[in-house]
Length: 126
Length: 134
Image (tube, rainbow over all chains, first blue to last red; front, side, top):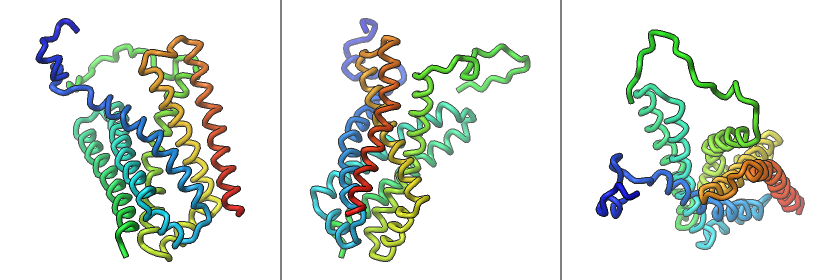
């Protein structure tokens, strides 16, 4: 817009003091998830009925473990942003909203780190 | 956010219940619902991965739960939610570029989400059953 100073335009920041990170990160992780979820479905379908040793050996391979870690990262970021929008739409009391947003982050961090830990343990663990 | 205290009943703008149902509105609601379901559904993936990392016995337990008819029903629902949310997400990415916003195009894209997600879910489960039968 012509109303903005060149410096403000360069920084990409409006009066809210922050830019469209939420919107952009939601789209960015959406595109990443498209590819990574397709990979996950293909991986899981291929492991249907496989015994523990096979699953363990497969998931320990770098070309499965690395996309899995990427999926976990992209997935939980997308989850956190989406749930944040839902909370902000429906929870109007300030205290409950803050509590819900905290729980949202805790849940996503827990799920993300649990999955990442499991993948890394399968790769490096005994 | 200012929290206004209403002492008089003011007229409210019309909400969901007042409008005739349209496919884009149903898709919007279902997109949000599937998103919320997938949010908690990630616990299934976490359970599978952590069980595999913990050892043979926990992995056998989680596998048995997933292979149980109820477990399979949950996974089937999870697959559909995933397919629906993915295709709905693609629709939103198309709309983000400013394309496909004519009413006719909106309707077509929304119905594509409905039928596409059903087809995708069935295709994935056909592959699951083929793989499981080997």
